Image (cartoon, rainbow, N blue to C red):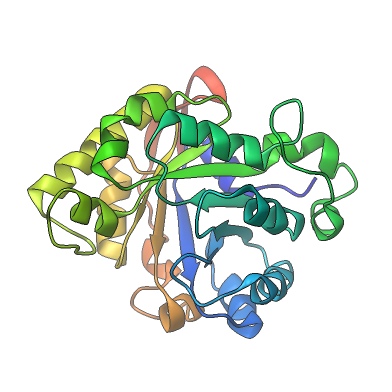
Length: 271
């Protein structure tokens, strides 16, 4: 099966630099895929893409080196299954507030006996390879968004969910839930304290933690703190490798050590 670059970087102890794409355009996807990102996420929650747009964008991304991910609008098995069948290599799901919801997310991403995903990966098998069925459960990523006060309170139970590959902090919704104004790249102590709580729980569990960022300086700071998945850019910034918010600004990612749940007991160094 085609390698999941996000998973590979995590297994090596590194941090993933993810591009974010809300423009429903296959040309933009193709250009963005060639700009040096480790992965590109197509946003179906706040972006303008529908399913038909997304299929064409996944096809465009498949001509590039990046790993294609998708953020779904809600925790619902139908759209998750369709996106995986279309070739998405990972699902980022918003508003996962409880361990029960997290277990549902994982089950929707995996075939039996590990989950309830229905079988029909016509395009996914073309993209992933002839051994897709045998390796999909271990290759496709389930990433839960922790972005409410309730989720922060439940974070230890959420990150303990079997089969969960990562968690992802949405700082704007988290701020609103905590009674604060939403702000990207925030230094609000109420929000940053909650983010630190999430990161600490993830690191204890050996689960990579991610964060939605606006600029590369903030993203680098969060990588140094221990986040292993940072999303930056949207639109033009994502399709121009020389743009001030583009991936070149993160080429000098710091080396760090982390424990991997997939490689228990081993400390891994990565970029």
